[in-house]
Image 1 (tube, rainbow, N blue to C red):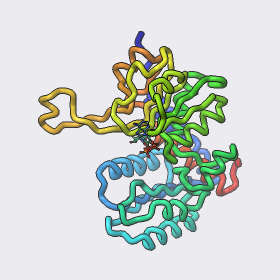
Image 2: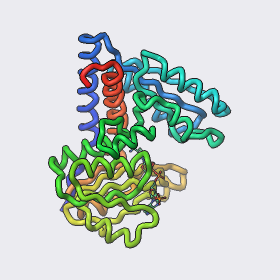
Image 3: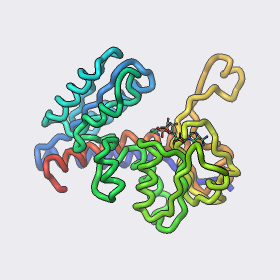
Length: 297
Ligand code: NDP
Protein backbone atom coordinates (compact mmCIF):
# COMPACT_ATOMS: atom_id res chain seq x y z
CA UNK A 1 0.00 0.00 0.00
CA UNK A 2 1.21 3.50 -0.73
CA UNK A 3 -0.37 6.41 1.09
CA UNK A 4 -1.88 9.39 -0.65
CA UNK A 5 0.52 12.34 -0.39
CA UNK A 6 -1.30 15.41 0.92
CA UNK A 7 -0.05 18.29 -1.22
CA UNK A 8 0.29 21.39 0.97
CA UNK A 9 1.51 23.42 -1.99
CA UNK A 10 -1.72 23.09 -3.96
CA UNK A 11 -3.96 23.76 -0.95
CA UNK A 12 -1.84 26.72 0.24
CA UNK A 13 -1.86 28.26 -3.26
CA UNK A 14 -5.64 27.96 -3.39
CA UNK A 15 -6.01 29.56 0.06
CA UNK A 16 -3.66 32.42 -0.88
CA UNK A 17 -5.69 33.00 -4.05
CA UNK A 18 -8.90 33.17 -1.96
CA UNK A 19 -7.27 35.64 0.44
CA UNK A 20 -6.04 37.77 -2.48
CA UNK A 21 -9.59 37.92 -3.87
CA UNK A 22 -10.99 38.82 -0.45
CA UNK A 23 -8.41 41.58 0.03
CA UNK A 24 -9.32 43.04 -3.39
CA UNK A 25 -13.01 42.95 -2.44
CA UNK A 26 -12.40 44.66 0.93
CA UNK A 27 -10.33 47.34 -0.77
CA UNK A 28 -12.96 47.94 -3.46
CA UNK A 29 -16.09 47.77 -1.28
CA UNK A 30 -14.85 49.21 2.03
CA UNK A 31 -11.54 50.94 1.24
CA UNK A 32 -10.07 48.53 3.80
CA UNK A 33 -6.57 47.21 3.16
CA UNK A 34 -5.68 44.54 5.75
CA UNK A 35 -2.27 45.34 7.22
CA UNK A 36 0.29 42.98 8.75
CA UNK A 37 3.30 44.03 10.85
CA UNK A 38 6.05 41.48 11.43
CA UNK A 39 8.70 42.15 14.05
CA UNK A 40 12.05 40.37 13.93
CA UNK A 41 14.62 40.84 16.68
CA UNK A 42 18.16 39.64 15.94
CA UNK A 43 19.77 37.66 13.15
CA UNK A 44 18.47 34.07 13.51
CA UNK A 45 18.81 32.70 9.94
CA UNK A 46 15.67 30.52 9.99
CA UNK A 47 13.61 33.42 11.39
CA UNK A 48 14.93 35.72 8.66
CA UNK A 49 13.72 33.28 5.99
CA UNK A 50 10.26 32.99 7.62
CA UNK A 51 9.92 36.76 8.05
CA UNK A 52 10.91 37.48 4.45
CA UNK A 53 8.37 34.95 3.22
CA UNK A 54 5.60 36.47 5.39
CA UNK A 55 6.36 39.96 4.05
CA UNK A 56 6.48 38.83 0.41
CA UNK A 57 3.27 36.79 0.58
CA UNK A 58 1.29 39.53 2.33
CA UNK A 59 2.36 42.07 -0.32
CA UNK A 60 1.52 39.59 -3.08
CA UNK A 61 -1.99 39.24 -1.61
CA UNK A 62 -2.47 43.01 -1.90
CA UNK A 63 -2.12 43.66 1.81
CA UNK A 64 -0.32 46.49 3.59
CA UNK A 65 2.86 44.93 4.96
CA UNK A 66 5.53 46.28 7.29
CA UNK A 67 8.58 44.44 8.63
CA UNK A 68 10.43 45.85 11.64
CA UNK A 69 13.96 44.45 11.94
CA UNK A 70 15.44 45.24 15.34
CA UNK A 71 19.01 44.58 16.48
CA UNK A 72 19.87 41.62 18.70
CA UNK A 73 20.54 43.92 21.69
CA UNK A 74 17.05 45.51 21.61
CA UNK A 75 15.78 46.14 25.15
CA UNK A 76 12.50 44.76 26.46
CA UNK A 77 11.01 48.25 26.94
CA UNK A 78 11.93 49.21 23.35
CA UNK A 79 10.21 46.12 21.95
CA UNK A 80 7.13 46.65 24.12
CA UNK A 81 6.96 50.29 22.96
CA UNK A 82 7.01 49.16 19.30
CA UNK A 83 4.21 46.67 20.01
CA UNK A 84 2.19 49.45 21.72
CA UNK A 85 2.69 51.69 18.66
CA UNK A 86 1.50 48.88 16.36
CA UNK A 87 -1.50 48.23 18.62
CA UNK A 88 -2.48 51.88 18.13
CA UNK A 89 -1.73 52.01 14.36
CA UNK A 90 -5.03 52.00 12.40
CA UNK A 91 -3.29 50.70 9.26
CA UNK A 92 -2.13 47.55 11.08
CA UNK A 93 -4.63 44.75 11.80
CA UNK A 94 -2.21 41.90 12.50
CA UNK A 95 0.97 41.89 14.61
CA UNK A 96 3.38 38.97 14.59
CA UNK A 97 6.51 38.97 16.73
CA UNK A 98 8.75 36.27 15.26
CA UNK A 99 9.81 33.69 17.86
CA UNK A 100 12.14 32.69 19.34
CA UNK A 101 13.28 36.03 20.74
CA UNK A 102 16.85 36.53 21.93
CA UNK A 103 17.33 35.07 25.43
CA UNK A 104 17.40 38.39 27.31
CA UNK A 105 13.84 39.20 26.18
CA UNK A 106 10.70 37.93 27.95
CA UNK A 107 8.53 36.28 25.26
CA UNK A 108 5.48 35.91 27.49
CA UNK A 109 5.48 39.62 28.38
CA UNK A 110 5.88 40.60 24.72
CA UNK A 111 3.00 38.36 23.61
CA UNK A 112 0.85 39.70 26.47
CA UNK A 113 1.51 43.25 25.20
CA UNK A 114 -0.01 42.50 21.76
CA UNK A 115 -3.65 43.52 21.43
CA UNK A 116 -5.66 40.25 21.35
CA UNK A 117 -7.59 41.69 18.37
CA UNK A 118 -4.33 41.94 16.37
CA UNK A 119 -2.70 38.74 17.68
CA UNK A 120 -2.61 36.89 14.33
CA UNK A 121 -0.29 34.23 15.78
CA UNK A 122 -3.06 33.34 18.25
CA UNK A 123 -0.67 33.15 21.20
CA UNK A 124 -2.25 35.73 23.52
CA UNK A 125 -3.90 34.13 26.53
CA UNK A 126 -7.23 35.75 25.54
CA UNK A 127 -7.18 33.97 22.18
CA UNK A 128 -6.05 30.67 23.74
CA UNK A 129 -8.89 31.00 26.26
CA UNK A 130 -11.47 31.89 23.61
CA UNK A 131 -10.40 28.87 21.54
CA UNK A 132 -10.71 26.59 24.57
CA UNK A 133 -14.14 28.06 25.34
CA UNK A 134 -15.33 27.55 21.77
CA UNK A 135 -15.67 31.31 21.13
CA UNK A 136 -14.47 33.13 17.99
CA UNK A 137 -10.70 33.55 18.36
CA UNK A 138 -7.58 34.22 16.37
CA UNK A 139 -6.19 30.68 16.16
CA UNK A 140 -2.47 29.86 15.66
CA UNK A 141 -1.69 29.53 11.95
CA UNK A 142 -0.05 26.09 11.83
CA UNK A 143 -2.96 24.33 13.59
CA UNK A 144 -5.39 26.08 11.23
CA UNK A 145 -3.32 24.78 8.31
CA UNK A 146 -3.41 21.24 9.73
CA UNK A 147 -7.20 21.37 9.96
CA UNK A 148 -7.62 22.62 6.39
CA UNK A 149 -5.45 19.73 5.12
CA UNK A 150 -7.43 17.25 7.23
CA UNK A 151 -10.77 18.54 5.98
CA UNK A 152 -9.52 18.34 2.37
CA UNK A 153 -8.44 14.75 2.94
CA UNK A 154 -11.18 13.37 5.17
CA UNK A 155 -14.17 15.70 5.02
CA UNK A 156 -16.22 15.03 8.15
CA UNK A 157 -14.02 13.87 11.04
CA UNK A 158 -16.76 13.33 13.64
CA UNK A 159 -16.22 10.28 15.82
CA UNK A 160 -12.67 9.54 14.65
CA UNK A 161 -9.81 8.93 17.09
CA UNK A 162 -7.17 11.68 16.90
CA UNK A 163 -3.79 11.59 18.62
CA UNK A 164 -1.68 14.74 18.81
CA UNK A 165 1.95 14.21 19.81
CA UNK A 166 3.16 17.48 21.35
CA UNK A 167 1.45 19.94 23.70
CA UNK A 168 2.97 23.32 22.86
CA UNK A 169 0.90 26.51 22.98
CA UNK A 170 1.81 27.13 19.34
CA UNK A 171 0.87 23.76 17.82
CA UNK A 172 -0.09 20.79 20.01
CA UNK A 173 -2.70 22.34 22.29
CA UNK A 174 -4.55 24.43 19.67
CA UNK A 175 -4.61 21.60 17.12
CA UNK A 176 -6.10 19.35 19.81
CA UNK A 177 -8.77 22.00 20.54
CA UNK A 178 -9.64 22.26 16.85
CA UNK A 179 -9.87 18.47 16.49
CA UNK A 180 -12.20 18.43 19.50
CA UNK A 181 -14.34 21.13 17.84
CA UNK A 182 -14.45 18.84 14.78
CA UNK A 183 -15.96 16.14 17.07
CA UNK A 184 -12.90 13.88 17.13
CA UNK A 185 -12.02 11.90 20.25
CA UNK A 186 -8.69 13.48 21.09
CA UNK A 187 -5.63 12.26 22.96
CA UNK A 188 -2.72 14.62 23.59
CA UNK A 189 0.62 12.82 24.01
CA UNK A 190 3.91 14.38 25.17
CA UNK A 191 7.37 13.54 26.47
CA UNK A 192 5.98 11.84 29.60
CA UNK A 193 3.42 9.68 27.77
CA UNK A 194 3.85 5.96 28.44
CA UNK A 195 3.79 3.46 25.58
CA UNK A 196 3.71 6.19 22.95
CA UNK A 197 3.79 3.77 19.96
CA UNK A 198 0.65 2.03 21.31
CA UNK A 199 -1.09 5.39 21.82
CA UNK A 200 -0.22 6.45 18.27
CA UNK A 201 -1.50 3.15 16.84
CA UNK A 202 -4.99 4.02 18.10
CA UNK A 203 -5.15 7.09 15.86
CA UNK A 204 -7.29 7.47 12.77
CA UNK A 205 -5.72 10.95 12.65
CA UNK A 206 -2.14 11.29 13.89
CA UNK A 207 -0.65 14.77 14.24
CA UNK A 208 3.08 14.92 15.02
CA UNK A 209 4.37 18.20 16.49
CA UNK A 210 7.42 17.13 18.43
CA UNK A 211 10.62 18.47 16.87
CA UNK A 212 12.41 15.09 16.74
CA UNK A 213 13.46 13.90 13.29
CA UNK A 214 11.64 10.76 12.07
CA UNK A 215 10.66 9.78 15.61
CA UNK A 216 7.29 8.30 14.56
CA UNK A 217 7.97 5.01 12.82
CA UNK A 218 5.82 3.11 10.35
CA UNK A 219 4.78 0.49 12.91
CA UNK A 220 3.39 3.26 15.19
CA UNK A 221 0.80 4.07 12.53
CA UNK A 222 -2.60 2.37 12.22
CA UNK A 223 -3.05 1.08 8.66
CA UNK A 224 -5.01 3.63 6.64
CA UNK A 225 -4.57 6.47 9.16
CA UNK A 226 -4.17 10.10 8.09
CA UNK A 227 -0.81 11.47 9.26
CA UNK A 228 -0.10 15.19 9.57
CA UNK A 229 3.60 15.87 10.11
CA UNK A 230 4.19 19.34 11.57
CA UNK A 231 7.85 18.78 12.41
CA UNK A 232 10.57 20.72 10.63
CA UNK A 233 13.99 19.31 11.50
CA UNK A 234 17.32 19.96 9.80
CA UNK A 235 19.44 16.79 9.53
CA UNK A 236 22.57 15.71 7.59
CA UNK A 237 21.93 14.05 4.19
CA UNK A 238 21.61 10.22 4.24
CA UNK A 239 24.18 10.12 1.42
CA UNK A 240 27.53 9.99 3.29
CA UNK A 241 29.33 12.03 0.61
CA UNK A 242 26.85 14.93 0.89
CA UNK A 243 26.78 14.54 4.69
CA UNK A 244 30.59 14.82 4.77
CA UNK A 245 30.27 18.08 2.82
CA UNK A 246 28.12 19.37 5.67
CA UNK A 247 24.97 19.44 3.50
CA UNK A 248 21.66 19.25 5.37
CA UNK A 249 18.01 18.72 4.49
CA UNK A 250 14.62 19.10 6.15
CA UNK A 251 12.71 16.12 7.53
CA UNK A 252 9.58 15.81 9.64
CA UNK A 253 8.84 14.11 12.95
CA UNK A 254 7.45 11.12 11.03
CA UNK A 255 9.58 8.53 9.23
CA UNK A 256 8.12 9.47 5.85
CA UNK A 257 9.17 6.42 3.82
CA UNK A 258 7.81 4.02 6.43
CA UNK A 259 4.62 6.07 6.82
CA UNK A 260 3.98 5.88 3.07
CA UNK A 261 3.77 2.09 3.36
CA UNK A 262 1.15 2.07 6.13
CA UNK A 263 -0.83 5.31 6.27
CA UNK A 264 -3.86 6.19 4.15
CA UNK A 265 -2.57 9.72 3.62
CA UNK A 266 0.47 11.64 4.81
CA UNK A 267 1.91 15.15 4.54
CA UNK A 268 5.45 15.44 3.19
CA UNK A 269 8.18 17.62 4.74
CA UNK A 270 8.85 19.96 3.06
CA UNK A 271 5.71 20.51 0.95
CA UNK A 272 3.03 19.85 3.56
CA UNK A 273 1.98 21.76 6.66
CA UNK A 274 4.80 24.33 6.47
CA UNK A 275 3.37 25.91 3.32
CA UNK A 276 -0.04 26.28 4.95
CA UNK A 277 1.27 28.35 7.85
CA UNK A 278 1.92 31.56 5.90
CA UNK A 279 -1.35 31.21 3.94
CA UNK A 280 -3.24 30.93 7.24
CA UNK A 281 -1.38 33.98 8.59
CA UNK A 282 -2.73 35.99 5.66
CA UNK A 283 -6.22 34.63 6.31
CA UNK A 284 -5.95 35.51 10.03
CA UNK A 285 -4.92 39.07 9.14
CA UNK A 286 -7.99 39.45 6.92
CA UNK A 287 -10.19 38.04 9.71
CA UNK A 288 -8.63 40.46 12.22
CA UNK A 289 -9.11 43.43 9.86
CA UNK A 290 -12.80 42.59 9.37
CA UNK A 291 -13.43 42.14 13.11
CA UNK A 292 -11.54 45.30 14.14
CA UNK A 293 -13.40 47.45 11.61
CA UNK A 294 -16.74 45.75 12.25
CA UNK A 295 -17.10 44.57 8.66
CA UNK A 296 -18.86 41.21 8.40
CA UNK A 297 -18.29 39.97 11.91
P1 NDP B 1 7.92 22.49 21.26
O1 NDP B 1 9.35 22.14 21.49
O2 NDP B 1 7.36 23.73 21.87
O3 NDP B 1 7.01 21.26 21.75
C1 NDP B 1 7.38 19.95 21.47
C2 NDP B 1 6.40 19.00 22.11
O4 NDP B 1 6.82 17.67 21.82
C3 NDP B 1 6.34 19.13 23.63
O5 NDP B 1 5.02 19.12 24.07
C4 NDP B 1 7.10 17.90 24.12
O6 NDP B 1 6.60 17.36 25.32
C5 NDP B 1 6.86 16.91 23.00
N1 NDP B 1 7.93 15.93 22.97
C6 NDP B 1 9.27 16.16 22.96
N2 NDP B 1 9.94 14.99 22.92
C7 NDP B 1 9.01 14.01 22.91
C8 NDP B 1 9.08 12.60 22.90
N3 NDP B 1 10.25 11.95 22.87
N4 NDP B 1 7.93 11.91 22.90
C9 NDP B 1 6.75 12.55 22.93
N5 NDP B 1 6.61 13.89 22.93
C10 NDP B 1 7.74 14.61 22.93
O7 NDP B 1 7.75 22.48 19.68
P2 NDP B 1 6.60 23.15 18.73
O8 NDP B 1 5.28 22.62 19.11
O9 NDP B 1 6.79 24.60 18.66
O10 NDP B 1 7.06 22.54 17.32
C11 NDP B 1 7.05 21.15 17.07
C12 NDP B 1 7.65 20.89 15.71
O11 NDP B 1 6.89 21.55 14.72
C13 NDP B 1 9.08 21.42 15.53
O12 NDP B 1 9.78 20.54 14.67
C14 NDP B 1 8.88 22.75 14.84
O13 NDP B 1 10.00 23.12 14.05
C15 NDP B 1 7.70 22.45 13.97
N6 NDP B 1 6.89 23.61 13.62
C16 NDP B 1 6.48 23.72 12.34
C17 NDP B 1 5.70 24.76 11.93
C18 NDP B 1 5.25 24.79 10.52
O14 NDP B 1 4.93 25.85 10.00
N7 NDP B 1 5.14 23.64 9.86
C19 NDP B 1 5.30 25.84 12.86
C20 NDP B 1 5.69 25.58 14.23
C21 NDP B 1 6.47 24.52 14.58
P3 NDP B 1 6.69 18.11 26.76
O15 NDP B 1 5.63 19.16 26.72
O16 NDP B 1 6.43 17.02 27.72
O17 NDP B 1 8.08 18.67 26.84
